[in-house]
Amino acid sequence: EVMTNSIYNDQKMEFETIKLINPLNNELSVLRTSLIPGLINVFETNLKSSINNQKFFEMGRTFKQFKNKIVEQDKIAGIFYFDFQKIFKQETIEWFKVKGFLEILLQIFGYNNLEFQKINKNLKLYHPTRSVIIKSNDIILGVFGELNPKFDQFKELKKRVYIFELNLDLLKNCRAN
Figure 1 (cartoon, rainbow, N blue to C red):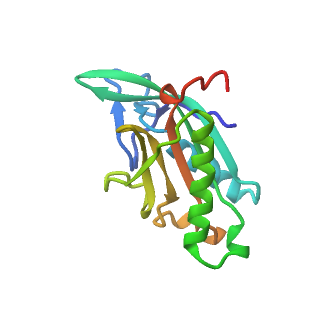
Figure 2: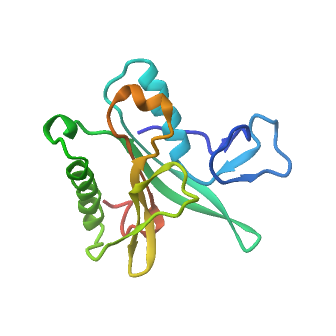
Figure 3: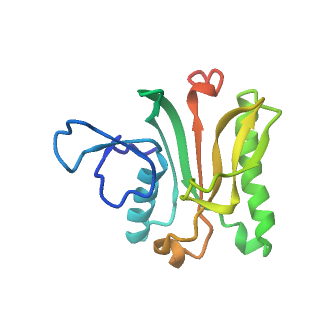
């Protein structure tokens, strides 16, 4: 488990943020709306340090604007890769294996009727064709998929990196489980 800061620097942000009206300093001027960018930074730092066990998760608070108010949400997110590529040559087999892992996790929390929809174009951190929005009874539980190949810093890894983010408030009995 890792813990990243919920306040970021506004420079070079490739995701939606909420700017603070009166920040303490310019280094900490926006609230995070996703846990994924922090996990990507941790992943990249460990990759540069030649650490091979790259499976991280974070449980934390994110923020979003809704009807001119800031709403806090508890989320869980993860970033990881598997060594399936050595065994399976086809990309689709690895994708379905990893997706199945997440489906089993959600079944533990009572979600058996899951729907998977194409992601929106504004989710730029996710691969455009190997990522999905996870729904149950028209409620969005989260997002799962492969990290967008535009991240050049992971090309030397030569493995597909997967990311997910789920809304903890929607996972029944998440604290007990």
